[in-house]
Amino acid sequence: MKKELESIQDSATIIPSTRELFMGFLSLSLSAFGGALPVAHRILVVRRKWLTSEDFFEVLALCQLLPGPNVLNMAVIIGSRYHKVRGAFFAVSGLMALPMLIVIGFAHLYTVFKNESLLRDILGGVNPAATGLMFAMVLQMMSSFFKIEWPFFRKESVYPLVFMLLSFVGVGVFHLSLLWVLLVLAPLNVARIWWKYKNENK
Amino acid sequence: MKISSPLTILGVHFFLLSFLAFGGANSAIPEMHRLMVYEYRWMSEEQFADLFAISRATPGPNVLISTLLGWYVAHFWGALVTTLAICLPSSVIAYCVGHLWKRFNYNPWLQIIKEGLFPIVLGFVAAAVLILIQISDHSWVAFLITGTTAVLSYKTQMHPLWLLGGAMILGVLGWV
Image (cartoon, rainbow over all chains, first blue to last red; front, side, top):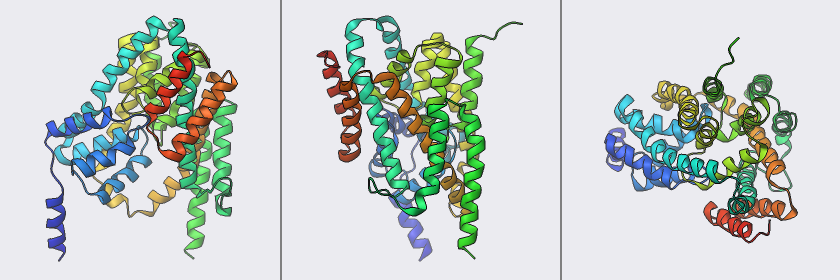
């Protein structure tokens, strides 16, 4: 039975070549605006069938835990899963190379035209909207993590909210260094969660 | 004593950021802002907000804001140094632990650390939003654009390019 399941799973997923890894992550990066993760599932699982949906979310969970850009970690892990260092290299190159060139093109245009009134007008509108997009991301993350139904949240979310507020004020209001805020708050909150689970399991 | 070149400074700071950026590049934005605008005065508040907006209006992973900042400070080599410095260390870590992912998911510590880090990371991203609002929203129309974009994007999952494009038109019309 177990063997049978494995063979079904194998036939459902396709092992990509290094070239396909490059092209797959290239198409992912080009359709990614304001974060690549929402498109990642559609391209890697639904369209390319490189891994099952279940595997995708397991890899995602690990990528979100690791430091560094999430989707980059995903390219490294998926690429190396199939072709070791070469696979990781091609997946990462696909993800980064072309968007980097595009962004450098824009950066160059920006340094040349940054004081032109047309560009100032354009950015006058685009800057607040770009900020709004990130605001939406915060709302999204808050509602999924704290199980918030605006403006209500659950009682057990009070401590996490306090930690969020502390890091928000430290970094956003007092402009403290990320390193120190992380070094102080992270061990405290991890210890708190550990304590919580330990007592629940008793 | 010789003052180190911008390239070295960029390299060292973005290298460190690679280890700190839990939850992705967005949580590193306040730190990038602090370095670029306050600590080294390589750009004004406004220029930082401009580069952030450009990074959102172009395709690719969020980490590309480091490429833009690097380019602005030290052109080609700046862009290359910041991008490699923030990408390489975390990629090496991901490569080393990647093959363990099956085992990892059943480890209770994964859940504990994740739950412990998440609110703090969320605070960083929220801080980035606060900083960007302070920099780029100078008029009530700008506030309105930020608010509307946030609500529309959160409620309707509308494609970001529509929202950025709409705001661009308002900007060109001179309403902001």
